[in-house]
Image 1 (tube, rainbow, N blue to C red):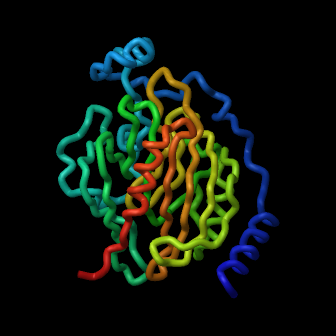
Image 2: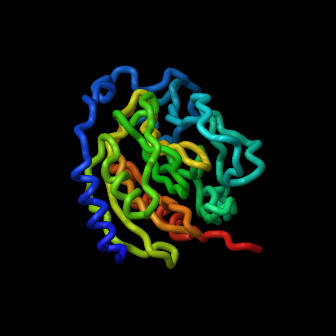
Length: 283
């Protein structure tokens, strides 16, 4: 069976088995979605001070980051770099331009799956995965490579439980990703090529306005959250592309996301980082 035929069969089975999701109660709760942790912001440039002073001075950027919540989701594993000693005041490390090694997961034989990724320019940080912002930290984009342990369920927010992905093939996992909570499919799963390998690609738009953050997945390398909203600003939807592929019999996800209102220069930098990904071979 070809990948195209497998994908059609898998999507048909998912449609037959699909059950209505529970009422999105948490999505209706807007007043408490931002954490109350606040910090003093750095001085803004004169160009935008008048526009942002009301929402930013004394409040700063609240980052919806599993690390900041103290949520332990996986055993310790290698991160983008071994020396994350210089942490920013929002709980994430600043990434200087350069190439970093990321832990992805393990193949069935237990061998480690790693990738190298290159980030360029300023305003890069790392939670569990790298993200880049505009110069004022208002809009964001990011890239992830991971082996999912569990996928979003319920309303998709980190306050709801996740479910274990039962998929064992790229086509089946892509079909499950197409059903993520609070999402709209912009591009149905279809065969693609990624890093010289067969893959399944899909694109979603997700409402990430959560009391905390929207959690796509738990993964071997950390928690895949995609809500990064400055305090006082409404949470804008996220557009996210997924490529699901088989790497040495391990099903791996590569994603690239951005806020719908992110400027093209921010989106392009995440795209360039995603294109730089290279799986690490035995040395």
